[in-house]
Amino acid sequence: MLGPVQWEWIATARLISRQRPSSTAVEAVLDGLLSSADQAMVNAFTTGFRVVQAQAAIGKVVADAAAAAAALESAQVVALGILVREQLDAAQFETLYRPFATVLPGPGYRPAAPIDQQVAAFVSRLPSLTGEPEAEVAVVAKALSERPKPPAAAATGPGAPLSAIGAPPSATGLDPAALYSAAWKEAIAAANQVARTQSFRAVQESAEQSAPHDGLGIVGFAGVAAGALFMRDVLPIEKVLLLYEPFAAALPYESLG
Image (cartoon, rainbow, N blue to C red; front, side, top):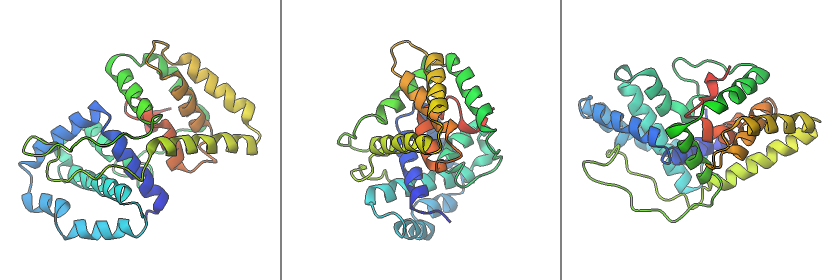
């Protein structure tokens, strides 16, 4: 069902999730629950035939090895989350399922509110960003504005998060910052093509004025996120989600409105 663009988004979201302490905390909870889960099922999603099937399916549409590995890992995390879903609270499951939530709606999915309502909700909630959620936004924003660095060695052993899943190789061919920049250029071009440039800029400025001006560097990213929301009817949803990604954990996309 999913094509190259969708898998590229899923892989990118997986890489970005590693920048988020909130995601790491939820995956630690998942890791603990898996120790008492049906091990045959856990093995099926980590080393079994289903993994080979998933690898083959992803490999048919994703040429880059790093992107394919990240996409597979994302799918594995979601499958394991579904396995123990009854033991997770709704917010924890939504965190795990986020890369798939809009392109492959899961349990409890709610369509996004109308565009104007969604933009207004985002702008009105920006001033509430403080403390750890705001710091996490800044970390993800930085990751989406810088070219990737050489990878550190992956954690291994009994204490490693989701240790049953091998961490994918470095995203040498998958550059979230480049994808983010390209998506923003596409949003600007789309605004020009449909004669919305003035309104588009007004939405950006409104978000930038509402975002915290405390030196963490999220002001411009707030404008980008608001612009993506404003243009979501003419942009592929994967591009909208990518441009909104710095705020996706603190102010979930589907909760706006």
